[in-house]
Image 1 (cartoon, rainbow, N blue to C red):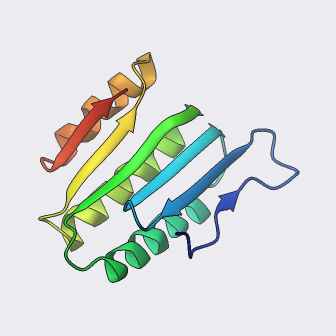
Image 2: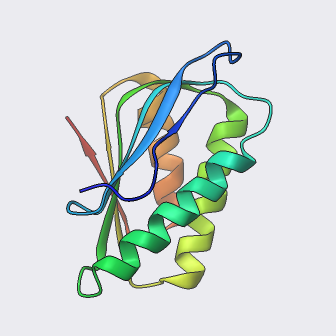
Length: 126
């Protein structure tokens, strides 16, 4: 079940990406290549998606981000994910976060750094 509209690259973007929310699974899926000048719309979407998910599943203390279909995120995108993690840690300190990814270089390195930022983050590689 999806209520929030997926966020997609517009036709002028060099790289194509999509973010979608599955509220039944408490999971945001990120797919494609993220190489943007401004990530503020993505950060806003992530916060809105998390808020909607939290409101709909009051008893669920777990939330996932699925990166299995993500090919690339530049350093600005990694920074926005860090900001998102910091906000979640402040607003929901007991929330168990799960990052789902592939065993590739950038995900292993970045996810390890994310775990250093948030002790409630668990990484699952497929």
